[in-house]
Amino acid sequence: MDGLDSLLDDLLTSRQLVQPVHEPTHRDGNVLDVVITLETSTLCGKLTVADPGISDHKLIVANPNVSRLKPQVRIINYRKIKSRHCCVRQPTK
Image (cartoon, rainbow, N blue to C red; front, side, top):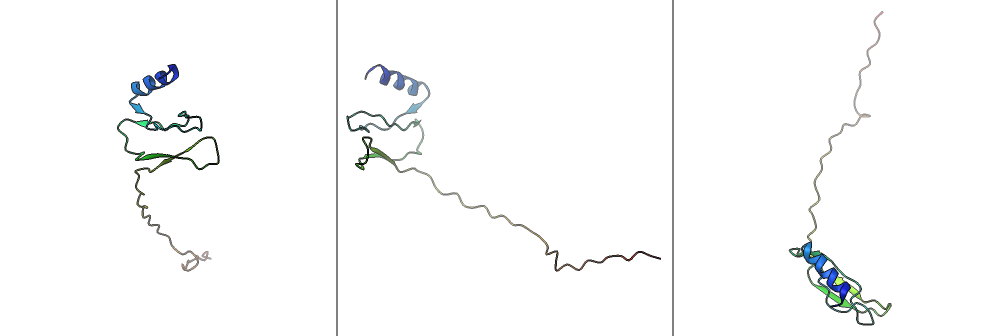
């Protein structure tokens, strides 16, 4: 590990963070593209590095462990003003 890698590793460790990408993400063999998560996080799931062949950078593919939230049912009560009979008082003489 060179100086910058060591500094980044120390910083991540001091904040309980990890960088789970361990494969090269650049054509020259360097890890340039990173994903940083909490050590205890299960959000990332499995990460893979793929080469789509359109750039000098590879693609980091994540399969996040998230579930879709159930939509909240919202009940709105209203009255139809046009169908409501309104009584208008006539002024008394």
